Length: 201
Image (cartoon, rainbow, N blue to C red; front, side, top):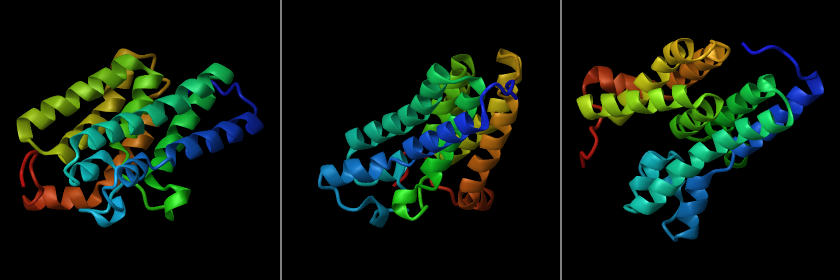
């Protein structure tokens, strides 16, 4: 964990800011703006890029992926610029939670993979790049997006120890647990051998 330098009031402020940034449902906003319907009534009902792709609009899916990552990174970078590293890590965690449980959508959000990667990239870009590489390697090997996401999250704690001073290790553990919880149904399908593969219709 980082050294606690910020006051409780400062930490609370950046926790709220991080949560509100993470709560912005870019997938819902983009699909609505493009006339693609209510994303929550498409496919899995998830608000992330994978479900946006089910609308058939690849550009909207790519934009959602990018923006969901950017909001996580923005929470970290803003807190780091105006406060300290403890506030930055807390803001990143709350941005992830905000994406998964957005107040605007009755606390029913996405699974947080893009936001997770944005947070980790902003906190320590070598760790973020290593997580992205892990995702790509697993996706290429097994052709299962959710499994790749789980592998990327699980590897983050290891990369945090190997590539940094370890101050973000605890945060990576917490984020990994949350990613696994959000992918509970995917894990059951992976075990059953019924999880769809990348490109499978």
